[in-house]
Image (cartoon, rainbow, N blue to C red):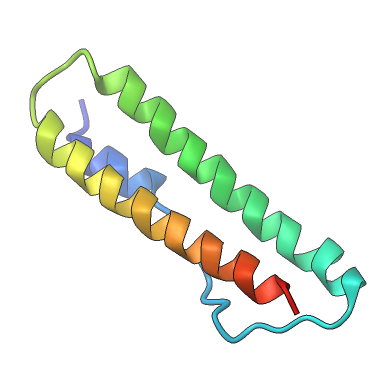
Length: 88
């Protein structure tokens, strides 16, 4: 059985930095950004499902939960940044 941290690392996602992104064309937004946001949402949902699944086993759960929580917070901040930059 894999350690919680190994499973957590498999479920993590590296999100591109969109902090300087400015899109002036609605087609750019429709074609490019939704796929990235959908991927982010999908990975966050996977992480949440994984936490629910592992909740019944307490071995290393605190450390695992803290790692996942950190990733989720980071993902949320980056997603918020993307959405703010879409507003022109």
